[in-house]
Length: 152
Image 1 (cartoon, rainbow, N blue to C red):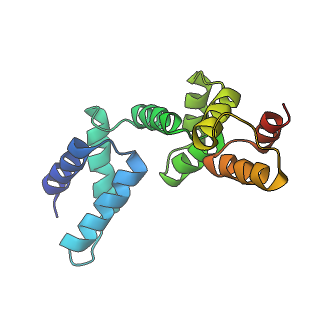
Image 2 (image 1 turned 90 degrees about the vertical axis):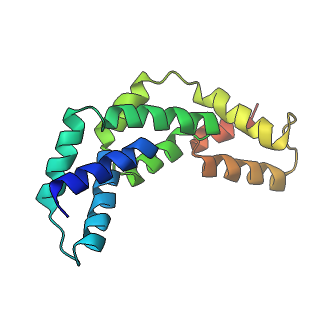
Image 3 (image 1 turned 135 degrees about the vertical axis):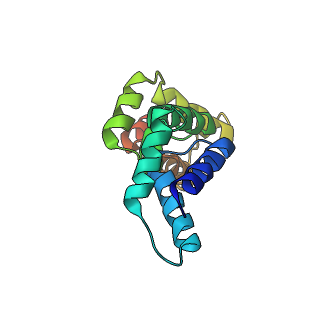
């Protein structure tokens, strides 16, 4: 697989959806392995990724901002969003920078997510309360935030 083929593959992938640099690197590496009988040229992949970045087709900051807004819309909390971003290969410094730019009241978001799933009234019994707290923790909200929500 030569540089031109790899570049075309990168454009094809980016035309379908936005990718981060690390995720696209992994995809290109897999593609090169399949097409070159197991031979992977990582410097060539880096060169193509740099070319895509220079042409503004590949921009980690834009991808992080878009993904973060999507996760917030889906009702995820800050812990879950950071975990998802880490799994996608984004730098922690970039993610923290974007978190500083986001204006979200996480406590209100947690209350909204809880009420959407379980209704407006707060649970009275321990079993139901712990079920709702586990749900909010799974969604990525801080534990102290969850307990504060239920102690009102």
